[in-house]
Image 1 (cartoon, rainbow, N blue to C red):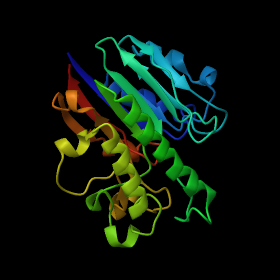
Image 2 (cartoon, helix red, strand yellow; image 1 turned 90 degrees about the horizontal axis):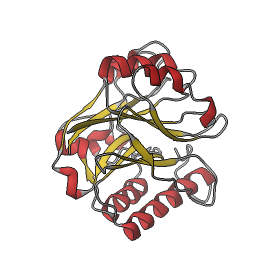
Image 3 (cartoon, rainbow, N blue to C red; image 1 turned 45 degrees about the vertical axis):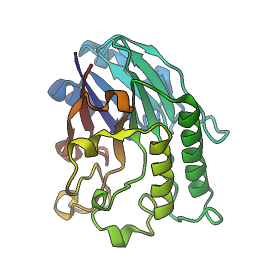
Length: 262
């Protein structure tokens, strides 16, 4: 059975409910993973999602910040969550679909503006978060699993609009890319997006600050779909749905899709 998974940093699920509904109606993923929901779980507008067939939800929330949710039209069970760096941030949740595939939905800290752990607590938090992800997956050895989310790092040179200019910019610094690579290596996660689209510039985020984001095209690939090796060959049809970045009152992120034949 083909299962299409989509990940999207929505930047407030209540504020942008209309474009979530638009995506669900037009693209009809089986599973939609949202980050930065910025809402308590009980305030997520579930009824309108359910009316479109997305009757199942696993979510973790907090007031005004962070928050992750997995919406599905396939039955699934809550597979728990993990808190990182001693904080009670809602930055991870997991669900297991009826086909046995477990989806981990992550919102990795952005890390602030200064890539220096001594001068910037947020950057220190980000690196420690990634270290804990690495250690967890190394110890847990997940199988038949997919990891998606806003990982807030664009690891490859062609994941950013200008590699040299961004080497000292948070999200593309060598130390962040190294930490993300260690997370990926911890369970031999396969970058499904780049497995399907191995060459060329590819972005999923464009700043709100750009007067014309589309023309300037100064993007970064911050949103990712990974899979464990046992199911990576079942993945196909990866794409970034760039059009959504141009919708009314958009998120600054675009949805990223992949399909798994399991």
